[in-house]
Length: 310
Image 1 (cartoon, helix red, strand yellow):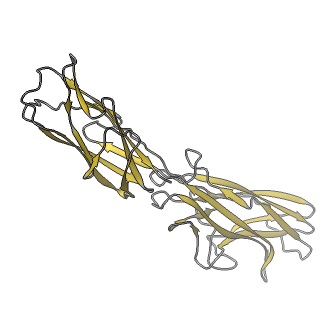
Image 2 (cartoon, rainbow, N blue to C red; image 1 turned 45 degrees about the vertical axis):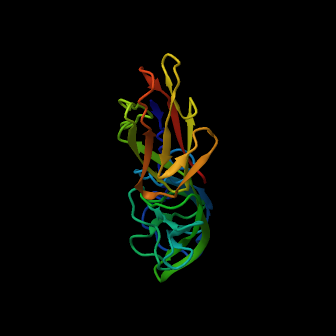
Image 3 (cartoon, rainbow, N blue to C red; image 1 turned 90 degrees about the vertical axis):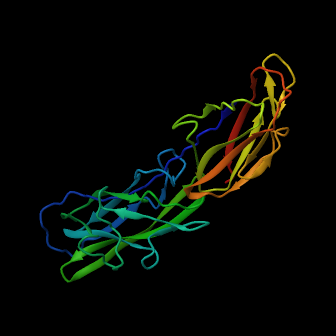
């Protein structure tokens, strides 16, 4: 008997924003200094496979956005900082749960986000201009840390990026803009079987001597962030066919305690929503005693397909 069970694996993602303009000579503050910025206002999370955040992906992914800072007038110093749209709420909200995200000054940090309106010494990204007209660019790195398990759907959130003139008398707000992050979360599924072996999606199952009957269980494990179902396609519609075309032997199949109708390849069997931990899914094969069956080899090819709905 040959059993096929696909291994479907998906992976996860993270994104980022950073700014690092080159610094000029130390310059005095000038009240005629005028600053404004232009920023990528919408960050779309693509992830390692281009389909958004992957809940089972182990590695961090970064999305990069550019901030353009324009200046005219006298010399001045400035700094960038950011704050969550709501107090201490640096999360992306979705249909079920939320994802933490961050905006970094560099790919390795520190964070640009601060609960303080003018930021702090760690969250401020400084720069300065000489007299005249000029522009500088800063890179912002947005990250969604890996290992966050949420259901499939679209998750979104927003931060406020602020540009301050660094006046010795105190920071003065020059410009601000929202930065939105939208992260689709794919519905993913992982299937494993010790009998098939790691990375294999096919196995051969020896049922042994059918004379006295057989009761055999194959153990699968699944992980998913969406409802999971299974379909079964028996080449001989639930019969073990004799190699020389003698009468076949019927067998029975159940998945997770549910009887499977091998006459109907279109039927689906709901397993549930497993979650981040592995969920055991036993596949039980039962063959009644066949003391009068013809001698020889009997075989069927059974294709098992696990699917996600979402």
